[in-house]
Amino acid sequence: MTLRFNTRAIHAGQEPDPITGAVIPPIYQTSTFAQDGIGQLRSGYEYSRSANPSRTALQENLAALEGGTHGFSFASGLAAEDTLVRALLRPGDRLLVSSDAYGGTHRLFGQVHTEWGLEVVPTDFADVDALRDSLAQSPAAMIWVETPTNPLMSVVDIAAVATVAREHGAFLVVDNTFASPYLQQPLSLGADAVVHSTTKYIGGHSDVVGGAIVLDDDEAAQKIAYLQNAAGAVSGPFDAWLTLRGIKTLGVRMDRHSSNAAQIAEYLVSHPAVERVYYPGLPDHPGHEIAAKQMKSFGGMLSVALRGGAAAALKLAESTELFTLAESLGGVESLIGYPTEMTHAALKGTPMEVPDNIIRISVGIEDVEDLQEDLGKALAN
Ligand SMILES: *Cc1c(COP(=O)(O)O)cnc(C)c1O
View 1: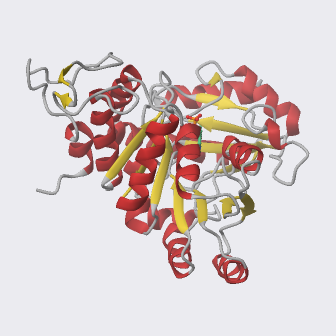
View 2: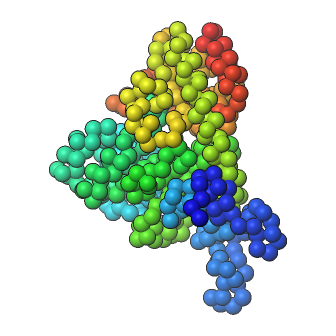
C-alpha cells in the first residue's frame, strides 16, 4: 500500500515499542548498549553516535516524508549541509550555490569549505540557459538550490535545473527548508538530495535545532552514513524525539501557515504603508507560476517592503505584539524580523545585501484575524 503524506508523517518509523507496546517510540536516552558477548549486539545498536533507536525512527520518517530511501538526521541544518558537502565533494571541486541562499550556507561554503579547497560560485538559477552555458564552460560537481529563498522569496524551477544538472553530471541538492516536504517534493522533480533545517517547519514549534539529508542514491548515502558517524554531528535522542513529535502535524500546520500567509499577504498588498509584498502566492510575484507548478501551496513566509524606508521597517518590527521579534521561522507562533540587521547582517555592503526597508514575517498558525489586527496596529503607529 502506498501511503499518502499525512499517514506517512504519523506512521513511518513509528512502530509501537516491541517490549512494552508504547505507542510512541521511547526516547532512548543512552550513550551505549549492552552486548551479550563480544560482537554480539542485541539489535544492532552499539554506541549512540553510530546509531540510536530514537534517531533511527526519525531518519526513517524523514526519508518517507521526502519520498527517498535514505534519511539522515543531524544536530543542525548546517551540520547536515557540512556533512553532505564533505561526504560527496573533494578539494578542487566546483560548487554552484543560489546567490540568495541562506546566509549561514554562504558562510559555511564561502568561509569554511573554500579553506578546504572547494571552489564556490554564487549563481542565479532563474536563467536556466545561462546555467547550461556556464556548466558547458566549466563543469560543477554540485549544484545547490534553495527555493523559495530568504527573504525575497525568489523561486527556482527545480525540474528545469535538474535536467541541466543531469546533462552535465552535477549532483543537485535542494534546500527544502522554506517549503517543507508537504508543499514541495524535490526528489520527485529530479533532485539528487534534499536538505532541511528541521529547526524550522519540520520541528515546527521553535523548541529544537536539527538538520536532515534525504536521498535515493545508495552510493552517496553510504558516504554520508560514513561521515555522519566519523565526524559525529548527529542529533541526540531527545532532539530526534521532539522533531518526530512535530512532524506528526506537519501537513495540517502547513495548510494553516499557507492560508494565513495568503490572507496576510492580501491584506498587506492593499495597505497604504506598504510598497511591495514578496509572497510567491501573489500573481505578480516573479516566481508565481513556477511556484504554482512545483508547490502544493505557497507556504507561510513573506516579506514586506515599506514606503517609509528603514525607519518604518524598524518601527514595524519593534511594535507588533503577537509577532515576536526573533531570528528563525517555521514555528506555530508568528515571528517578525529585520533581515539587514538580523539574519542577513553578514551580507551588508555586498551585492547580496537586503534592502533596508524590508521586514520578514514568518506567519504562524494563530487566528489570522488577530494577526491582521496586530499588523494593522503596528503599521498605524
Ligand atoms: C535555518 C536555515 C538553515 C540552517 O539551519 P540550522 O538548523 O540553523 O543550522 C539552512 N537553510 C535554510 C533555508 C534555513 O532557513
